[in-house]
Length: 370
Length: 81
Image (tube, rainbow over all chains, first blue to last red; front, top):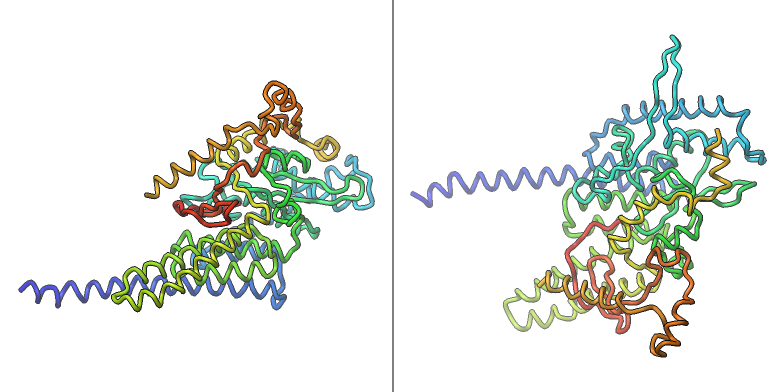
């Protein structure tokens, strides 16, 4: 009776559930595969590349292509119009006089829209206020909820982190027709600009400030080799920025489905590394994939039924381990040093509490005296 | 076992951090004076000393920088560096 019940009820039911799960994952993989192809096409310049499109592609895959892009674009459009209005209202009083004044004015406009409360006078004379974007201190690295990293989350909630805030800044600046560059520091993304009068300077959206390189280096636990090898503090090209989105895509996949066999994640990392060879997040994620591969092989060897099979697998396991070890050695040689968690949290705090100690006063006067 | 690995790693980290970064510490009182002349960007506010630890964490792996071997693993964690 029990056997009949098992054969007639439990077995078909189990197979049905497994089938549904596999089907669900396959459908999801289609979204991720499609997103990968879009980003890759942008990198090889088969498709027109914009940073906005790259970011939305990665985020949309996480939502199984269900991201409300119309709402996102609507919100973005409001921010662009607000920035334009701010620029027009402050054009005459803008103290920067360099030949690239229009460009710097756009940088300043986007900065103010994102970091300051702005009054908007309506046609009937009423005043409403556009509130600044704030740092979301809850789950800062998206450990528990990966959407915390998303620009779409930032736009809808007005709170974000050091990933989504500079991404949105770059998107807005580019929507206004000007280029800007992302830059990396340990556990952090910020903006690098160049202007004729001020030279290179940094814009920090997390705290709405302009830290100098020396402060970023000292407080960010940056090893000199990491700068020398361009792991950190480099103004990233458009292709490198899209490579960042490719690794975001891989990390979203990992959050949603786990490592799996690692092939999709590895493919994203390898492609990103073609265009940004020392991209630290791609290298670190790749070590995780190689670890998974090594552990799976080691388990297979341990479970082998004969001694001969075990011996045959030993070389394969050793090769996998050596590949992983070689990559870890390379990462260390490049200058990566893991920032202690407590130091990162302290660092976030000092962004707010010690602004006067690290800000570039020249830039601050230019941007904040409007 | 994983917890033991983590504990040993933390122990090593703190043990190494506890060491003074003064290269002349062994010279006694004179060495201590020289140690006061170490200049940093943040004047001690931030940890600006790297490479104090023999074993470092890279991703979810523990790496011995002297022997260049992977010597342990820790729990997977989301990387965002």
